[in-house]
Image 1 (cartoon, rainbow, N blue to C red):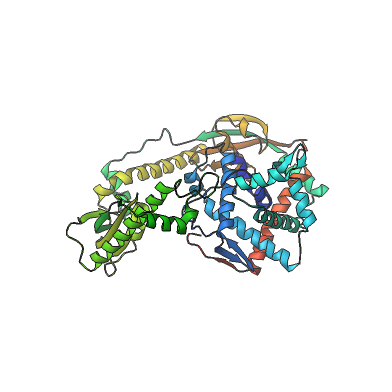
Image 2: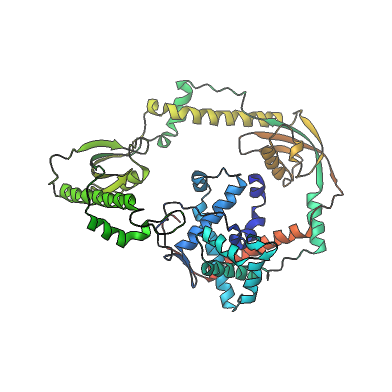
Amino acid sequence: MITWMQRHKKYLIITIWISTIAFVGAGFVGWGQYSYGDKAGAVAKVGNIEITMGELQKSYSRLYAQYNQVFQGNFDEEKAKSFGLQSQALNQLTNQALILNLAASYDLRVSDAELLASLMAQEAFLQDGSFNKDIYKETLSRNNLNTKEYEADLRKQLLIQKVLELLPVEASGSETKILNTLNNIADKLEYKVLDDTNISVSTSDAELKPYWETRQQEFMNEVSYELKYFKQEKITKEHSQEKINTYYAENKNHFKNDEAKIMSLEESRSLVLDELNAKATKDMALRNYIAYKKRKLSDDIELKTAVVSQANNPFTQEALDKIEKLSITSPFLKPIEINGVYYTFELIKIHPSTVKTFEEAKEDLIPMFIADKKREKLFDLVKNSLDSFKGEETDFITNADADKITDLSIEEANEFLTQLFTSNTKKGSISLKNGKVVLYNILEQKMLENTNESADSIANLKSSIFSSGLIRILNAKYKTEIFIQGQ
């Protein structure tokens, strides 16, 4: 499925833009870094349209649900980070905002009747084929939505769809014929797959040292930071009933049950005490931090030392990121919480990065040396084998026949055929991303009689092309400002 998405991603642009409402019932996913709590705060502004934190969180959640469906429930936050889901969510919203600006410039609107018709057609809200108001409200409530914000969101999506429907995406007969012609060219091949599995490489010092000497700057010791620090452990103390009552009254929205209803003081008493103790811990950590800066830290607080780097970090990445911003002239870091304990750091010395000696670099050097030398020898083998190789022979195949290339996986075969059918060389070699090389010789070529390309697939392609061009034009027309870091 992922391979298909990658090969056809340009067809999905419109679907992604206009289907964000479709995941009612999927639930919402947070990502920590952007969970500021203020769902009304603007995270970006495109033209005259602001994008709120709440919209960004919902966009992220919907994308997460889509990917989780593709991965059959095996999608997690680590995969989300590697896919850049946060940036995707924001890009999706900025693209939508560009189109909404365009709609506003032409005074396009979605009428109440159009909105109602769309609501009444959504399967999630139907009972026995008819729209059910109670199911509608209950479904939104389960997803932490109210009718006002859902309908406002739906109205936006309908307006975007109305704009996109103005694009000229109908397929002509000649376009269908051209695409069928391109997709029905068939080749009969002789091919051979080469890899470096059986290539041996010597890793003696005599071989390695010249290689290392040309690449010394690639093998550096890490920057490390010499620190002093002290800890503020969790505080547990007795609190007066008056203090508990006051804190609960001022912060009762913190204490909700599974149904998002505010709990009573008795129901939430342990949670209230936890927050009061956490606040007391933080207050004490801050007081000790100030005392430490003034060199008046109590003698009963133990100062410890550590040398930390990216490879040797007993704390957290967040703590190290902040430590890296310290300087000798500004060496103190305010208390930072790690697993409920507050740490206060002082930078003592920065140990700069230095070039590793040959012996220090050797462990990292050997795999790189082997990979490069194997690649060299593999291409020598390709060069010497191309004119005379004997390989497997196929029947007539098209770029859709990856399953007929038996010496490669489906992903590898798709990659090979994509390059093959865009090449104008009868005999040659094609390098795959995983390092394999395929030698090929086109023995015969003919045109098949299949006519399997529909007008819909061509319309999707044209829609993608026109929409991408539209976004480029709108980006130039409307200013986009991003107000959050990391985007």
